[in-house]
Image (cartoon, rainbow, N blue to C red; front, side, top):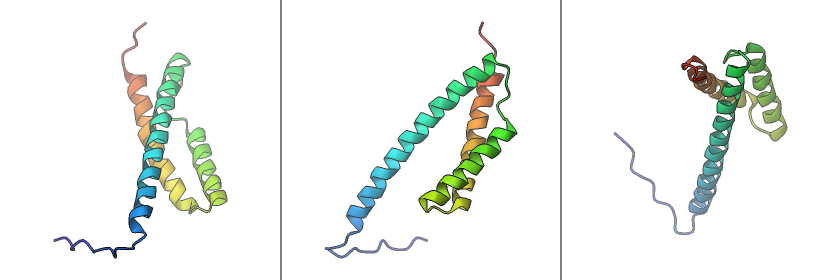
Length: 105
C-alpha cells in the first residue's frame, strides 16, 4: 500500500531542484559508463599481462582514495567507501568475464 503523492504548493522550489538532481544523475551515469569503458580497457591489459581481475592492494587503495576524496568534498566517507566497494565488486566481475573468456589469438 503506497502513500498518496503529496501535492506541492504552486510556488514550490522542488520541481527546479528535482530537475537539477535529475541532470546530476544523468552526469553520474555518463561518468559511470566512462569508468566501465576504462575497466574494459584494464581487462584487455590484464589479459595481455596475465594479471588477475582482483588485485587486493589496488582494491584497498581505491577504497582509501574514495574515503579521502569524500572527506575533502564534505561527503560521508563511509557512504563513499560503501559505494566504491560495491562498484569495484561489479567491475571486478566485469573484468573477470573478459579474463575468463576464451582467447582469440
